[in-house]
Image 1: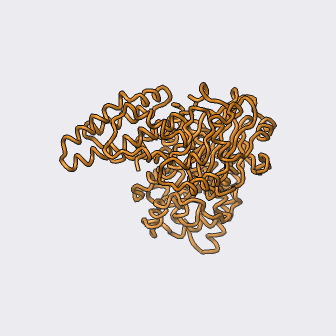
Image 2: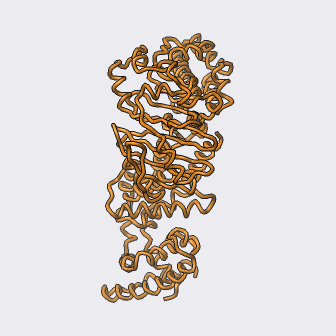
Length: 188
Length: 359
């Protein structure tokens, strides 16, 4: 009997601990921020339905990322929304101060365009590392590959991105001055 | 450009950085509640009976109502032990006084296909739901260490569940006699099959236990048969409160319980088919809800005497036999008593309806 309560409490803790990370993960990978609500809702619904299968401690986060990745794949395949879950979250993401226009400087658009041109696995290795802050071992778990392969791909992806940013910059005539300005600001 | 500089650029292009979470307000909690108000895994399917809210105690109530069930192992009988002497017919069910028209009740019941395991050694250890027209319910069969759970869901949710199960494993063909479905593999000794929707419902069967293999699962499925409602009801152990037993069992449970003004036990007529724990929760939940409503009414009206009567009735729940009998099986009584004591002390939680499933 108590195991049922444990599961219920466990899910609440998992949700509390990882909601923000999952929302961030989703927002980074959908075209419109409000679509992230579908990804988050679906991911946690899967987690709820399989609460007994969620691994312990930090592995739970990686397990959720794995679920979210599959949910996202369905989303990108154009699956219909299956549930009406998360409407309030969707409204918030739609109606809130979504993106500060001031943050959408061309430099960022250039980088995003370059990222979009990477192969899917390279892009995921890079963004899971830099945006989501995962270690190579953790990236490997989420993507279902080994950690050595992640390190190799990470190096390759960075090299490829450098080239692409150079191409984008050349084609747009834009200078990525944000780089030289921001590094000192972060005390590096 | 060093790796560090490149990573800085990437980080700066993070779409998430520009979106704060401060404006989400209650959307985060709202989503949690929405998700947890759905039945999770089959073993927990009963939890949808009570909506969950943030209070842990509420979760405890819902879970514990849902999960009690194993008490039937000792007293339950397998379907094969029934020979019709205690058969509850649909006609009897329909004759029970209540708001539902007899013909409509029979039609609704017949629309929900029923399943039994037609093999010696299986015992029904838990049953809940199967209310007329409800389209949901669950029943568990046990044989040694094997546990076979069957959960009924409305057909409209089939696609959602199917998509979910695709993430468990690749589906494989399977079925019971005359009813095909898809088999999903949770682990080497944990298999489930989703039967395709039929008559507005679909059924998911899941087998777990020592020594379970796909071959064992398939073999057991050959013994699962669809039966008519009469046969299904006749297979229920004597301790299960089938519709024809509701009135008498309610009288028994209510014998030492003070009843709220205007209490009508026929409100229990639509309770479906439940094991003793679930039925005890239904009875005490109804009584508790009405006493709390009476306490609230009296409090608003300034009727001190009525409020005192309601408080005393709620406090007396610590002595109700049914709750004390249930206490060994789960925590429903504990949750009920906590709520009863709060109300008796003048504190009616704003979410009290969720605690014990008040309408």
